[in-house]
Length: 212
Ligand SMILES: Nc1nc2c(c(=O)[nH]1)N[C@H]1C(S)=C(S)[C@@H](COP(=O)(O)O)O[C@H]1N2
Ligand SMILES: [Mo]
Image 1: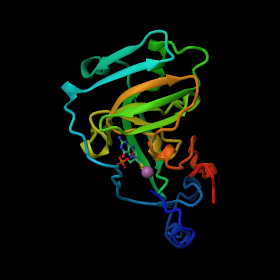
Image 2: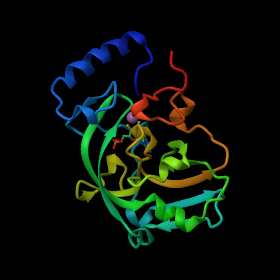
Image 3: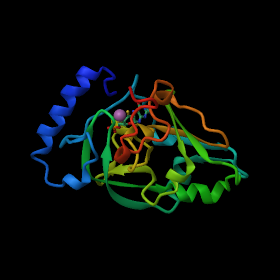
């Protein structure tokens, strides 16, 4: 993740300015980000190996109708394709990625969240977690994604199924998704417990909870 050492962050800023001189779609690049052309892999710890037939998702917490979905059931739900830019807090931005998946809204319509539910914790196989406001998950481009650029989502990018929340820093998109907990009170996930932001809007540079 991004360095908290001010000296290293200064160098980063220079690198970012240098890279962006060559970027065409500058208005699509949030402040402090540079455009990458490869798709970096960022995983904390082991890469889980989940076969689609073993995959399942639990949706629980502040909902009227908890839900357990397996791969077959997921494949029967309405799906959509989105073309979006993604932004990692370590400062790379990848423009124009194409994802297919089930809109988060489809899940919401099945579980009927309690009216007081305001936050969601994403749980991944392997133990990763990340929290965010429910409101952010209700945006149109938010998917439970299983295709990337026309192909099954590669394992290192979170296959068989990951969250895609493209308008927030990419750590808010759990790979190898296995649980969604609707919450009334907010709670920090993995990186959030280590000082990263509870919201994570790249356009507001919401990188850390307390900027130093
Ligand atoms: N399960 C899990 N999800 C995760 C992570 C992780 O370590 N484990 N890393 C996060 C971070 S910091 C980023 S930038 C993106 C990286 O996704 P990618 O490897 O497909 O580029 O996944 C996010 N989701
Ligand atoms: Mo990240």
